[in-house]
Length: 306
Ligand code: ATP
Image (cartoon, rainbow, N blue to C red):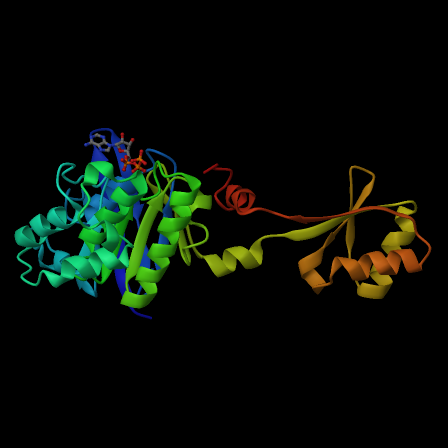
């Protein structure tokens, strides 16, 4: 297991308030890590400490296998980031904006500009002034700028903020492609889980400065419940049949539904309905329910709604 980033008891205190509290975060090579928490949970403060923009009150950051020392910013060469909204010069073109940036970064090869624009689907818009860009295009231009120096780790703070659903889908596709084609590791923060759900493989949930949970999405999906609620004319008979045929335990809901866990024995609902009908039961309703991720997270995070 190769870690790209680990924070150890990272803490930021502003007077009486602890904005980030003993946070231990683990990001492995190739991860697309979703850093999720409500507004004010401490995401930006954490990311700023990782990027050396503000000093931690205590605790530390280990990046690419080395502890980050105060005043040493050499590790930033391998990191690209957008913290808060990426601003560009509106009166300049996309190309001119990135040209300014490579000059400032000391990158000589101008070809990197078109390469970056291409990766974010903006090559055809390279000579358009940024003031004519949509919010999604501006966001992508910000990412194109953040990857000009070919970083190994890309940190995006709330990149989906303000985008419409189509803009989110588009951004997701670019991010997924970027990650796979450039062997990038990504940390993406958001306060809306559903916006990240389809692009991340790992998730850290932060609330009131505390990292409540860090979990692989695969585990999350496996742990999400999937069940069927069945309404029949003879509940007792149906329960017995389901148990004797499929070994399914059932639970009675609202005195009228039999609820069975579909994941437990991996049985398809069409087989269940067939069994009940073949046994002369009248099947009024069979509802396939899947606990959604939001519900799962409320339970994971001890009732904290994201
Ligand atoms: P958002 O999505 O709204 O940016 P966030 O999760 O990024 O939320 P932070 O910006 O990290 O949250 O803020 C965490 C807490 O720290 C908030 O309560 C905020 O008011 C406080 N905070 C942040 N910066 C400072 C500061 N410079 N001085 C005092 N308090 C601060």
